[in-house]
Length: 296
Image (cartoon, rainbow, N blue to C red):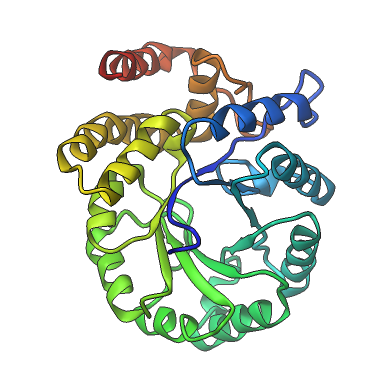
């Protein structure tokens, strides 16, 4: 049984009127998601505005998730530009109860991040990490580098690098990574529109921004696929894919947070310099959410 099978919600981070982390709102969101059939949560990811959080905020949000969802997998995003910082975040996450860490590559000095340099970096992090490591291929709109296939194959040989999240939106590339890695190396898709296709290709599950908006539908898709209920899985795909394309892909974190507000959860504004979803796009968002309501 795969350790990270199913759908994981990369949770947003709610802020209060003063711009501080709203811990009560985060707890309420996670407790609500936990009853929808999702397998777990990612705290400190790109959807959670991790790059805009202080280290102590990342630690506190992780501890809240661990307390609010005791029967679920909790993965912590710990990638940073320096190895020193990455290791500190990783050790802190393990102490806070993370089941695994999700580590993005250092990318500011992109030209220097050759495959051997990246291999040494991830191997050093995995050697020191008290918990399993998942490598994060960041979405193309954020990424300044893409892992070559041979690097993924080498990393998959490390006993403490147990999987990856692939947010490229490249189904052929994901399928290739499944094929060149061991059977117990878990590939998780980061593109909600591709969840069903990715599962068909051998992915273990997904870490999906759209699961903030349609957690039950994403979870039902994964469980229907696992049980061989093809028609149900395809029906859920037809619900989830437009939400990923329109909200996650088309509006980003501000759109996801605005959607949460409209669905009765806690979204709120992003942390500056991110701006809220423009008023001019609210009707578009409402239309997408009406499609969700009609389908379910």
